[in-house]
Length: 411
Length: 75
Image (tube, rainbow over all chains, first blue to last red; front, side, top):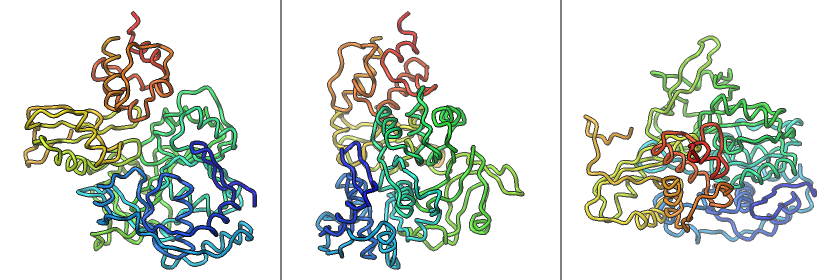
């Protein structure tokens, strides 16, 4: 039971499975709205919600108060805690503990927020089944050491967490570390699997080092170019590199090697293409707040069919205006709305600017009514938006051009 | 060189950090100047707008000196 559950080099601590069971047994408070920066505390609350068979909502630790209020429609999430007392678990072995954690999840659900395609972000609630649809539990996986390279409150992070938890694996946090520390952690803990955005992998290049312990690299969230993939193969010579198509609403859906995706037989009647856009049957979705009447969900992802029998396809681009900043989706409307509330702004247009580091960054053009100080505007936006949503370049212009339909032109 | 210094200082000031007085080739963009991935992305966009060169095209650039070299600012 002294095997490791979680290591956090950034926060200088590690926890064994035994520590986890003791911490759960001693936990006196459940937070149904979990807004936390410490990954282990997030994991504890998720496991606690499973033991209580209750829904939990995860919020990014860096959400501003304004964002939390807008998303949850609640002002005082930190006071909404429940006193609890869980049974002692520290005498259980790992398998019995895991059996106990997952024994009853009939009412359990986990809610997170997605950037949404229009207007404000929306809430997505996943059941245990929809979240763990692609979790593989087998002997080959039970010795895995996971490099945790996603935000723990996002869909991709949750999928890695559940894959690792259900297999009783060790999790090593890599998210937020610099390149040198990431390499040290991989070597020191013999990490065997990493799932991350292409941006995360690009940040590891160039290097002359090689790491043989990694057997699987998974990438998702953005397009991955062939060249980066080839360079990664040199750094991780034993790794099989897989691309995954996943989203907050759906979870993981397809995997590919290279950029050509194929479809599992059991999903054949659950996806369709209309005018090259991918539609997913609602039975594969989490529960979305608001609109959930339609049988088919339009993903906004445009594809190109490579072959019909067997069906193979490539992802081309997105139909909507979301800006992908290193795997984080930014809704330009949300950013524009925040900027418009600043005194002295007449009009604003937010768009993405392509670059080879993060794929895109958020930039904007503003029309001002009176002289404003850029620094003060930035300070204000920090109280309204997460850092990656704040425009990196703010250009002051005379006017903003519109398309013939009167919509603001973004590109 | 002056232009590059100005670009880097612009990014530092927007982060409410102290500007630097001169460019030192060995300075690490992340460890010495404290730039994160968002800052590096902004840096590459601003440099490309000014010099028409994508300095990060072949992978991550680690030091100020590597940028100077890619932009041929030594000549």
